[in-house]
Amino acid sequence: MLYHNLSVNAAGHLAIAGIDACELAEQFGTPLYVLDEDQVRANCQTYVKAMREHLPQGSMPLYASKALCFKGIYPVIDSEHMGADVVSPGEIATALAAGFSASKLYFHGTNKTDADIAYGVEQGVGCFVVDNVNELTALGAEACARGVTQRVLLRITVGLDPHTLAAINTGKVDSQFGVPIETGQAMRFVAEALKTDGVEVVGFHSHIGSQIFEATSFCDQVDRLLAFACAVRDELGFVAGTFNLGGGFGVRYVESDPEVDIAANIAAIARHLEAGCEAAGYPVPRVLLEPGRSIVANAGVTLYATGGIKTVEGYRDYVTVDGGMTDNPRYALYQSAYTVLNASRANEPANLECTIAGRCCESGDRIAEGIRIARPERGDIIAVLTTGAYNFAMSSNYNRVLRPALVMLHDGEARLAVRRQTVDDLLSLEL
Ligand code: LLP
View (spheres, rainbow, N blue to C red):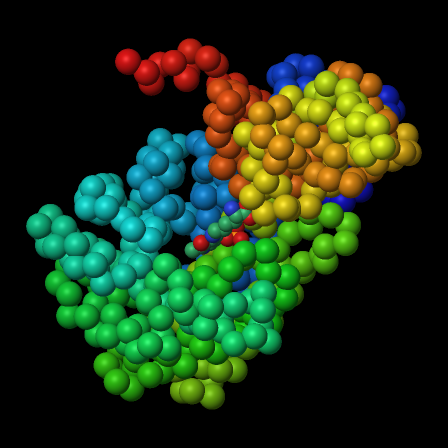
């Protein structure tokens, strides 16, 4: 099995954290998002422990809410001593509704509107990650009008594409996120921020990408950010106390994906930062990380009921499911690979090569192609693994398909955390 929280029980069914997947489907209906809270906690603990061990005091992981945002995740994040990255008033309101402290929120977003800025300041979010000069000006004005000083990190584009390291990295300089070092704009951005009333610059933020497996990309990022910080110190006399290195640690979707040793990666990044700071005579800053995928992805499984096999003779076998791109658009968007199992026949050999197709009137509505599962019968429960990140969060009502429920598993018990959407929910918005 891909993950140690998955097993096959005496009935030959897939069990998630010891709980029978077919019974979950029976009890809560399908499609169903299942989230193993204990796995989420274990993932959080890996980050917190490694960061406490290897990085200066005050360093901590911030959960990237965009990966999976619903009220029930925040008490888990909070009790595991993490902050959170939020990107919209919707995410802020969800965190606050769950009792999460505003002071532990870091407010991201490429194009925060005046209303977003006002809301964030009003709610007392701990720190804004300011994306650009326009936002800086608007935020300074808002903070002054309210008589407060807003702590900020400045988002810097280091010009690194972790997926094409050998290539010339100009691709990432041309990005809608942050302000690039290479063009000289980042230096001017910092200078401007240092003289903007209403904001206090605490450091820099940079994010290099997602689903990254090696520590070397993050070490390259550290090099570039540190070189920039030294230039800022020399030119403007400002020393950054915080480096936020963003998110991006990869997870295993299929057996062939590498296993990432997050603790070892953090230790390697910390050693690299320390050595760089020592060489440059720069005080080692506290470090923030923003993991999303690596906190929730491997804790999630989606369960579907299959409508059976539809054979197109001479071509292929489709196994249809009662969800698809509406609850998981990642194959349609990115051709993301997934591991799929017949949860009803988890002991049987994977003897059917097939394509998993959803229920939308759209040929791209697929979850996986060319995979093998145990030959299903109509009504069998199909499990798609590693769906905790960017599935629920990116779901839609295309074709008026209703959003699934989400259950959390903890200590051998399943608890409904988000109920299934109803037609009345949809119609309630329409006048
Ligand atoms: N911080 C910032 C500023 C980000 O933009 C992101 C992700 C993260 C943190 C979290 O990265 P993670 O640890 O989850 O890799 N929808 C795509 C992923 C988009 C990620 C966008 N930014 C997917 O389904 O793969």
